[in-house]
Amino acid sequence: MDALPIEEATGAAYASQVPGKMHACGHDGHTAMLLGAAKYLTETRNFDGTVVLLFQPAEEGGAGGLKMVEDGAMDRWNVQEVYGLHNYPGLPVGEFAIRPGPLMASADQFEIVVTGKGGHAAEPHQAIDTTLASAQIVVSLQSVVARNVQPIQPAVLSVTALQTESDTFNVIPQTAHIRGTVRCFDPVTRDLVEARLRAVVEHTATAYGASAAIDYQRGYPPTINNPEATQHAINAASVVGVKVNPETAPVMPAEDFSYMLEARPGAYIFLGNGDTPMCHHPAYDFTDDAAPFGVSYFVELIEQRMPRQEG
Ligand SMILES: [Zn+2]
Ligand SMILES: [Zn+2]
Image 1 (cartoon, helix red, strand yellow):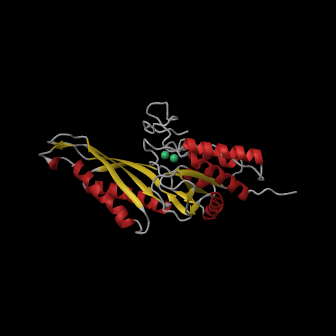
Image 2 (image 1 turned 45 degrees about the vertical axis):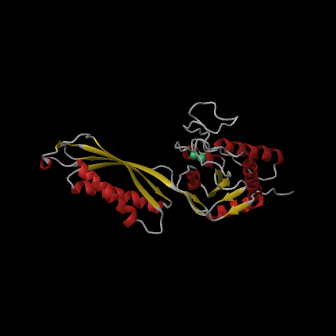
Image 3 (image 1 turned 45 degrees about the horizontal axis):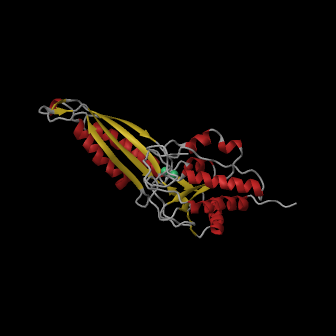
């Protein structure tokens, strides 16, 4: 499940045996925890109804959460609530952190092709300067978060690449490529940023006589916890955890469990991995001592939400 293209540097006896690939996000640990819950639940059956265990694949960019929803994982078994868990380095082992509402950001990316009119750099009046138009686009895009987004809403618009097809001194290039990413916590803000990005890019290009083609790719939506389900998660975590932070700060990475939260009410919770390197670091190591807390969390949550009817 979900190896990353990183050379493992843990030196652990159980380190990856595949060069350049490692479980650097702890999804092997997540898998073990859900299997542990499955073992306990099938042996004890101290609940009523049907529990569906979703081993969500391809979190690292492949949107496995979306594929599972599209394949009918929610409808096929009449799933009514959905809960997910991710380990969190830096949070002490046994501690949980969660919040109602947005927990993780959306992640979109854009690629813009600016087309002017190539020509001799000494005859700019015969050309349309793609470089100038592109530079103005980069600058103007910074007005979107600063001037259009409501100040109390977090949003990031980063331009990460600006390349013209010219790499010499005396050529005005015909085209230029601009790339970047957009991160938001709120769907309305996300729509606004995309709309403003399109308007600013198109009109700025036009103002300089150039044109712009925009390829805006929506990635994972923001991970938004349902308030009631969050309380259910807190109730379960409070029983099995050392401590629960019910109002943790949102974080900017994105998570495709968000697609499941769009399909059903539910909640995503962080479980402490202790003082380890961050996820996606070559020395990251899932803390085995955290596993019993994850197993117990799922079991407790299920037994609380689906109590066995006596008689
Ligand atoms: Zn992960
Ligand atoms: Zn990851």
